[in-house]
Length: 191
Image (cartoon, rainbow, N blue to C red; front, side, top):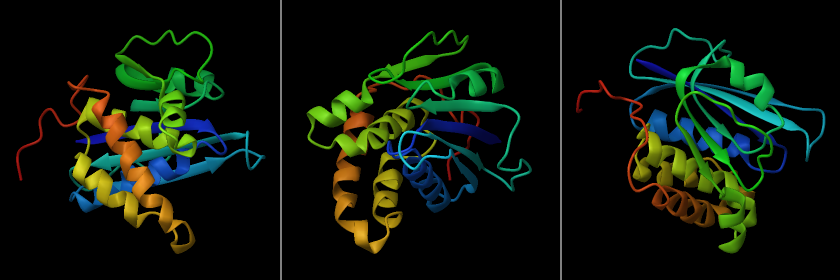
């Protein structure tokens, strides 16, 4: 079983870091992973997107996909591009404190004020980690422990001091979703 995910936002929101954190957590959980990031023409404020493919067996899907099982949208900028690529019934998490416009999706949608929550917690640059924590709680695609451990692996040495903040943001986001919305691995057998 494979799960294709779109992560999207604007530069400076941490979308690429969130995607990499999930990919490392999945890899460390014994899953197969491919990730592809793309960036707009601006360093901050331009679009930034990532496609992550996570599977329980050898992956057959390239990291550039025509459709996906789920999405994490930190901004509405690329929503018109990704919305038609989502399978019917797919799961979407929206950062409702930034996302503007009509969602109009036919599957389960979870709206989290990730940017507002991160700012109120004194970690305004960790909004994508709040959203990722909520995404993982909603889907069970990896465990919170795997995600927290990955937060320490993905940062370069000169940014390692932010790992603890990112882990805390992941925990805050995870705590926002007391019950799963959808199961990423409904058919997964215990290891």
